[in-house]
Amino acid sequence: MNPQAKLIFISSLLLGTTIVISSNHWITAWAGLEINTLAILPLISKSHHPRAIEAATKYFLTQATASALLLFSSMTNAWHTGQWDITQMTHPTSCLILTSALAMKLGLVPFHFWFPEVLQGSPLITGLLLSTAMKLPPITLLYMTAQSLNPTVLTGMAILSAALGGWMGLNQTQVRKILAFSSISHLGWMAIVLVYNPKLTLLNFYLYTLMTAAIFLTLNSTNTTKLSTLMTSWTKAPALSAMLMLTLLSLAGLPPLTGFLPKWLIIQELTKQEMTPTATIIALLSLLGLFFYLRLAYCATITLPPHSTNHMKQWHTNKPIPSSIAILTVLSTTLLPLSPMISPTI
Image (cartoon, rainbow, N blue to C red; front, side, top):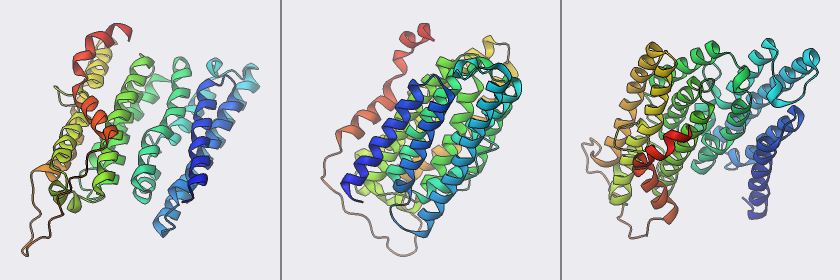
C-alpha cells in the first residue's frame, strides 16, 4: 500500500476515535464511528485476496447496520425526551437499541458472528487494530451511558460472550480466529461489570489492549498465522517464543501475571454487588479460554510437530527483538504488583 494512503487512513482512524471520545452529541459520535469504519476498510482489504475482500464486506455491512441502529436509538431518545446529549439517554427502548448497536460494533454475543471471519481475513497488524483501537469508541460510548443501561441484558450478554468465546475457540487451528474468540470472551468480562463500576471496564480494556498488542506484534515478527507454523517458530527466536508463552498465560488470567488483575477486581466487585453466582459462573467459563491459551502456549514453546518425515526447521535469526514488543511483553507479565495503587482509584 502507498505510504501516503496508509498515513491518511491511520490519521482518519485517530481522528474518528478522537471525535467519538470527545463528543457530547449523538450526531458527532455517529460521525466519528463512520470515519473509523471507512478508514479501516482499505486496511482490511489491502491484500486483494478474496478472503480479505469478503472480510471487508462483512465488516462494512455489520458496522453500517450498527451505526444505523445507534442513530435510530438516539433519535428515539431525542423524540421522547428532547435530549441529544450522550449522557442523557433515559428512554428504556432507546437504551435497549443502543445496547444492541454497541454490542454489534464490539462483537458481543449474540452479534459476534462477523468478528472471527473478519479477523481471519485481515493482516495481523490490521487484526491488532480491529481487536484494540476499533473497540475503544464503542466502549467509550458504553462508559458514558453506563448508568442508563439495563444490567440484566448486559449480564446475560456478558455470560453468553464468556461461554461462546471460550467454547468456540477450542477447536480452532488459525491463530487469528483463536484471538478473535479470546476477544469475545474478554468483552464478556468488560460488559458484566459495566453498570456497577465503569472504571473497572476501562481498566480491563486497557490491560487487554496491552496484552493483545504484545501477542499480535510477536506473531507478526515471527510471521505466524497457524498453529502448525507456531510450532516451528521457536527455532527462529527462542526468547520471543518464551515471552509469548508468558503473555498468553497472562491473557488467560493466571495469578502471578498482569491478566489476573482485572479478573480479580471484577470478581471482587460482583461479590460486593451480591452477585456471587454470576461471579462463579463467569470465573468457571474462563477455564474454557484457559484451555486454548494453554494450547497456544504449548505450541509456541514446548512442541515439535508430529511428522513422520524430517520437518524443516526455520533459521535462527540474530535479528534484535523490536523494543515495542519487549516493553509490551514485560508490561503484560509484571503489572500485578501495582494492584494496591490501582484498587483505591476504582
